[in-house]
Image (cartoon, rainbow, N blue to C red; front, top):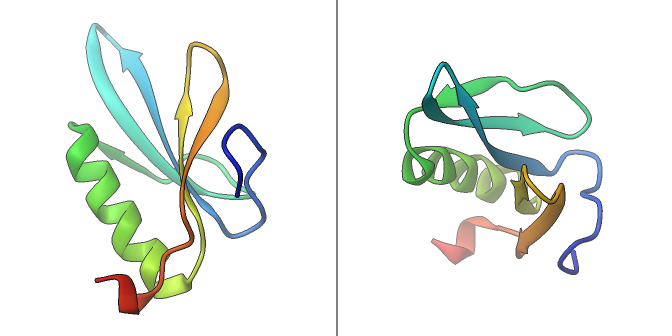
Length: 80
């Protein structure tokens, strides 16, 4: 997935948000709503990476300010 392109069905998205003056990191698959919430980016990316490797899909982060995606390449179990 080239940087700034839309993720494909099944890809994993980690996005940053603020709620009640706290940073939160949300995880979801495309298409779909936010499914999991984490207190740190590292924790969210770790969970997303594990899932993406297992499913052989892309992992992307969403910049909530600019609404653009930055990509981490397709993950597979052999990347571990």
